[in-house]
Image (cartoon, rainbow, N blue to C red; front, side, top):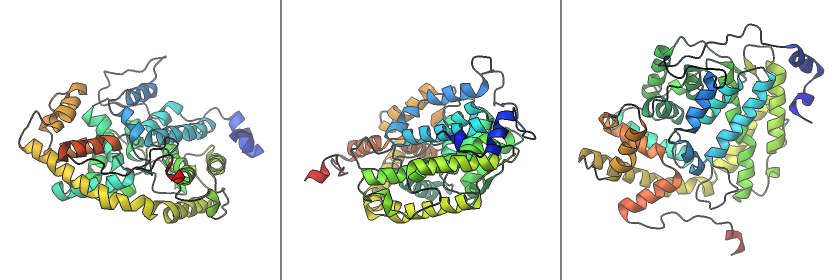
Length: 394
């Protein structure tokens, strides 16, 4: 049975008869440089955004960035690259039934985590502490995703795609997602800058399109059950049965299916995205249980604070020293500054504030890249003890 067949007869009838959604504003795609990347029949505006993101210099690095579980040599455990694909797939399923722009959904979904650090949200916290201590500004991965695509590599993406990436906020569950109009890039830039200077600004971000609202809720749907599956593979829990029964299920497939159906049932024909109270409360309970039984488990969290956090500090300081000395033969010049200049329209990246350059570089790294750099800088090997496929056979 597909998602359409799970809907009520009334919702199915609406989908059959609806050719558009009354009252929904569908703004014209806006770019910083409207003379370039003009849409045409075979490459509409948001298709261009999708392809720009997928061919951007850091897209490949999704593959080896932690989603939740680091320190595993196990290709069955999800990495961030798979997460963004799941977000895109789930959001497109919903968007198709709500008659939304699927290319815009895909662009936002595939780009939303491209600024994420190595070692998941732990790495994000550690980098934020260092960046904050040295600049007084805040680092957040959603804001940095915008920086990567709009500033570091200047891809001339649409305002609608960039705003969806900025506002994806998958950690904040809402019952309703109501888009708020965005006047243009001037307002967007102010909203982005505020996230650097005001710690509370992240929690107040609201997307400007229904497509971005769908991606935002699907960012959460994509990991609720998947993190449970991965926790079983990582032997953090024995099975998903350790969790309480839920109205939307305890297993990944049921969680995804039931939330898709509920969102479509409650959102079709409306100018906002909505979950009913039963499903919203269930989402909050699932997130709470995941924190209690997975994310806060010592097996997951202890190594980050005991090993990775001190490594972040040493690497940050070493890279800063290279820039202060203007050592153009050093790794931050040859592997980062020169790399960015090669792929950037404007070749003056080294004029960027020093702490920002160091932060950009660390955020761009995969887990393995970071470990290799640490070993290269400090001559220390086997810093991390990885868990292999065969640990349970010893």
